[in-house]
Image 1: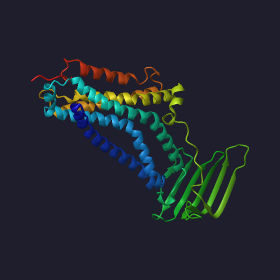
Image 2 (image 1 turned 120 degrees about the horizontal axis):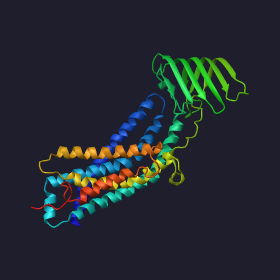
Image 3 (image 1 turned 90 degrees about the vertical axis):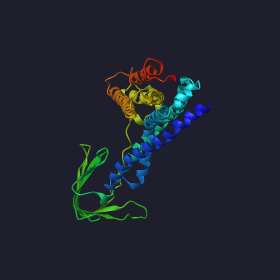
Image 4 (image 1 turned 180 degrees about the vertical axis):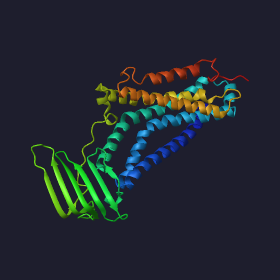
Length: 362
């Protein structure tokens, strides 16, 4: 028990450090992409923190297995390098005790990853799609750069500003196209200027100078309308966004389990497979951490990195192939974890392979 607690502590410390670093890097990457949209006026600043948090939640199902894999490699490589494993094996500690300790930690993390994939992942994607859809209806005209077309997520709104003297200055040669369920609205104006909202806390409005408004009815029996005004006030954020459409990543587990659509099958199999990947990657770190004689630590790291990226590249490719129907629902993506299972069992239990974990002799 003392040795098991010691091994758990040796793995847990780098696990926390690596996971924290990976989460910080991913959060910074996501934050950077959302900030660029906010600077361009396509995203309200208040939604950045929540969107970034949702992205991080979704990424944990991949970051946790990767952190465990790296933590086992780093900690066991140090224990081998300092001959601590040699001392443990000399005291009649069996290799199965080491494997049981890693399996216990990996099993606990696999349960966490399974909950993230089956419950947190669909909720986070639902919330992410809802926030994105709502954000598409908001626009800060003062942040729009001249000479660029701004198109929202589903293409229902297009805005173009020809010229502007500087930040906060009136926009010149403005073009706006709005697609509503029953009509298409096209507006052009010589200039546009932001005005404060009519009430405290309300969204700002836009004053259009020398405006032309064209409304094209989607019903061929309807009547199109044309409006010309020397000046008019409009609310750029008055258009209600359409509710998010169906997406497999945001669908419930029950719906995915009953569906035979390739995209739904791939998503459901991915959610079920992430705990298995956590277990396998944790166990794979055991044999890869042991160096052969005259083998440098850098070569061991190179092999470990190639093994990890090779697995996830093949895994994500298999999911894409199932989504597009290139691979049937069975074997689906399961053949990839099956290959890794075979590799792990071979590395751990065939003694003649020199990279296996076994008792060392003095």
